[in-house]
Length: 207
Image (tube, rainbow, N blue to C red; front, side, top):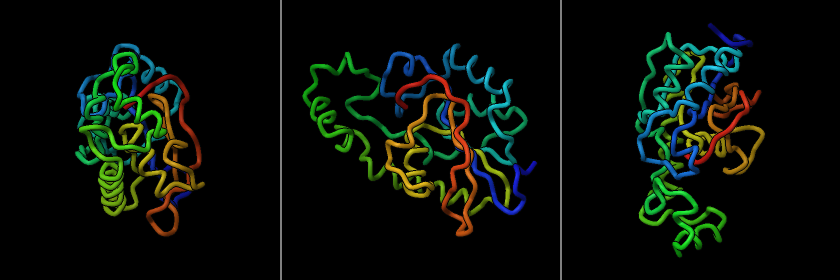
């Protein structure tokens, strides 16, 4: 079913529900953990409240937390998995929280750099953004005028909207909590996104 204006493709960007690592404020990038019980229940509550628009086609990161979220929100759709939509690999910080990293000099330097430095031993932010944006461009190029949902990670959404979102904002200005998202409309150039609405606001953390 089309959403609203028949002339413009709608793109729904949704961050996955909570995991155990999210509850513990861990950096879960490549770590492949499922939704926790609270995460599943929060998504179900939002679905029952009608928080998520319908979609003709659903794409997801191949990590369990995104697949499971997509299945809960769009049970009638089989998500198309796209490896390049996965979250950034946090390297030395992966699957750790701030308490465990408190004495880590690399972590102190990273914090002092306001998150602009590369993750030690991890994926560079430039490479991460590049692959997420390339995946988005491919998906939109293949959209065939179908309203499209991407059930992915917070960082993935931030990377896409920093480049293509309107109004224009910085990377960290597009942060979402778990289970939140944005309803967007594809602009006339068939690449930029006009952000229409923020979807369902509740809790969440990194990844």
